[in-house]
Image (cartoon, rainbow, N blue to C red; front, side, top):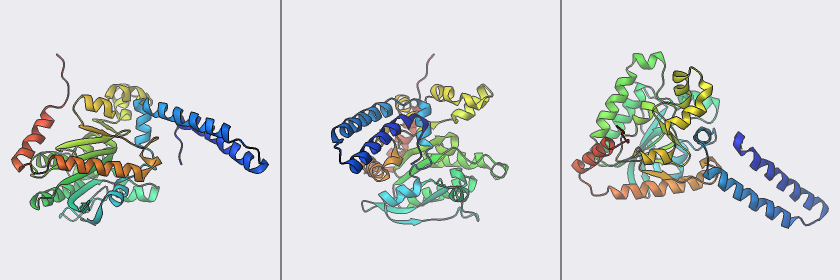
Length: 316
């Protein structure tokens, strides 16, 4: 397990616990009482630590390389997943993956950004940064779902759309803008979940939804803290200050009506217990789909429109 800097005190106590256990085994001296005290202290400290994380610490958890990715969740919460490829213009962007699946026997279209867990996978998935063809593929799947009356679930974890020259040459901005427009007009329920990083239009291009949820330690923002710091102070090392100012955490986003619900993570983050995280996520998705069951297409579109119009808090 990769240990983050602010977690190191926990692991130092855990090393002491392991040391006592080994001594106990080697010498037959009973240290059970001492071990139990340390374990209880560790648990309490961990609960307090993760209940009071600063925005930049949440950012580190959201970026943890062992955090579950899109395909992990698909394998854990759905059945009979069939991946659908291509944008019908000759390309298949691997940074966005989607297809038909069942969740508790109910057919859905599930689409999301995919990150890798090692260099080889990250190169295949372009580090989770979609190109225009990825957004075109996603839109094709959304329209397919709308045609066959299947609810749509999107799982978003991206640092943003790919900023390369080739992406700009092939109309990156237009592809995202078209997605925003067309997603607003979909005639089926759309549920979006920010599972890790949700940056800029690259995330929003998959998140124009009837309900937007965010995992407890994920973040959602118009620009990454590093990007913000580079613009404001010409110094990316000021990212911690930018993270505070941007209000990127679930608690702030809920207050500003940017998201509708925070999904609790296992203690320490989703990467500590992916199965538990997937179970909680599945429960939230099923509950959300039930909320929109039976709504007519016109009602779904109106609710989606009014939701986004009501976002934010404005002060004179």
